[in-house]
Amino acid sequence: MIQLLKSVRASDIREVFRIADEDQKGYLLRSDFEVACAGLLGYTPSNLELDQLSRGHAFNKGDVTLPVFTELVSARLNWSEDDLLRETFLEMDLSRNGFISRRDFIQCVRRLCPRVPEARLRQAFAEVDGDGDGRVSFRDFDRMMKAFR
Image (cartoon, rainbow, N blue to C red; front, side, top):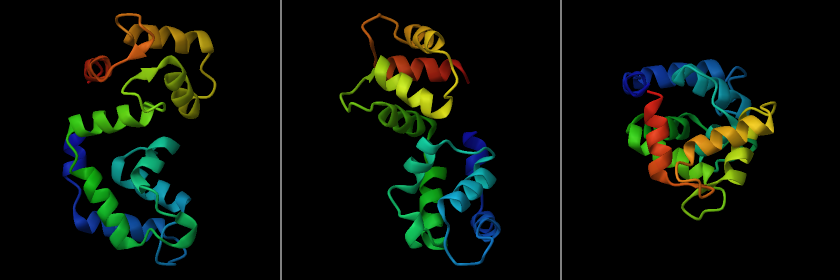
């Protein structure tokens, strides 16, 4: 995925913005932003990822113009795999204590996959929580994510 992201050109960003801005209003609404991200990233980002990508810009106020979109996407395209993993970990650390708790994990996964059974979520968390202390450190998270490459 990192290779795919690095191959995106400025003209690709402009074209995707133009297509996503169907009404030609000059800025992207959240739904437009989602379409544009899907066009560039090759998949539809989750709400968590959209929030992370938009960095607090107000979609309903016309904040996400082409220059802003280009800046947001370019910053994302230049991230290394380690940067992406660190940012994802920080987004999942809802308590902001340096660990992902079982509660944080379940809450984040519920946003993405609301129908996953609770027992399966607890089992998945236990598999990542190697020492069984109820917390996933960045080291545990990094090891798990890199195992899926």
